[in-house]
Length: 444
Ligand code: S3P
Image 1 (cartoon, rainbow, N blue to C red):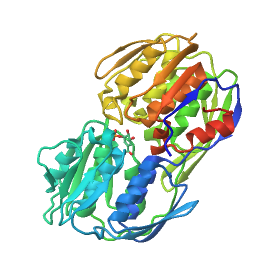
Image 2: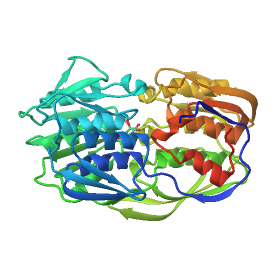
Image 3: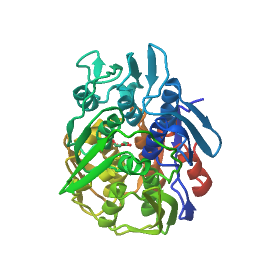
Image 4: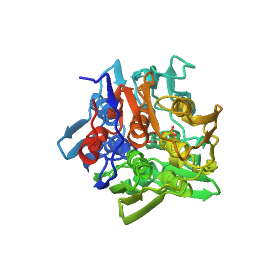
């Protein structure tokens, strides 16, 4: 049963805690997709068990892949590259997930039948032309022609060709889409990519998929080509830094508090939030750094502070913090001075228009902003303390808006009525349970 809304009306009391968060979403979805292309059985521990990941599992099951889930593990019975088995008129539902919708398509580029991809209301308004264009050039067709969003149908081809692809948004989904297409394309794919999260590159290395990377200034030149056969790929998924981010901010904004977040993915391409918050005066340390199958992970220690200061945020950090800006905006709201974040038009292309909605929420709690289509100035107030009633409704059920507002209520006060709280289940289903169990939060 879905909950219509919940009420949050008490700040958390000072705390000293150690917690874990759910597994990383980007890694979980990529692992499932790649495990389906392996000839044989692969196993993951601590795979994220959220609605987005479930959409990936259901899509793969419909494509003839057997997947077994137990409490701790997920086992995928891969059928090899292009080994999917399915009937005509197949419909795949990517649900709310841009990553699932955009990354399943390159695995279907040899399909002899049309396959239709659908998604929920939020996903159906998001841009798919960014991956239709490169896949078209590789030789894949989409129907209806010139449509830019879901639902769309893909029709593969036997005659595929490699491309030179310039990825200049800093989008890991676009980069990954072309990299995955190389599994089914003869010759060498060349991608000139603005920096973005590197989980796919690390997985290619570990699976022995031919890949070369040259770094020239801010661009990664990535060359990939078709492997022969892919061998088993077992993985232990570390915690998601995008989920950890909400608790980092809760700690920074709650007086005399201390938190250890254990076993968090620390891939350098995801650490924008830590760099930005440290520049704003946050007290954050990393300990117990380790490596597992190419991915770094470790524990993050955070202590609250009253000395937060504004930032003029470098755009070069945007991609590495792209999912964390909403919660970073909350820190800017409580910091001394005017913060400025720019070249962020991509933020309006997420599950909701986050730059726009983030600004509206800050205005609602009394923070002045100046927002354009691609930037925001936030006039911080270190004395910000809330005591009014706030209602969060009609936000396209964006999980990160829901979590941002919950943290605002718990750290800054006020009486908040937040609609569609189940939206968090797309990415971080343990969010409210962790708050109840470790921080004594009561949701009514
Ligand atoms: C993701 C990449 C980012 C991010 C999304 C997950 C990924 O999207 O916002 O939540 O797993 O590759 P873009 O590639 O569109 O920036």
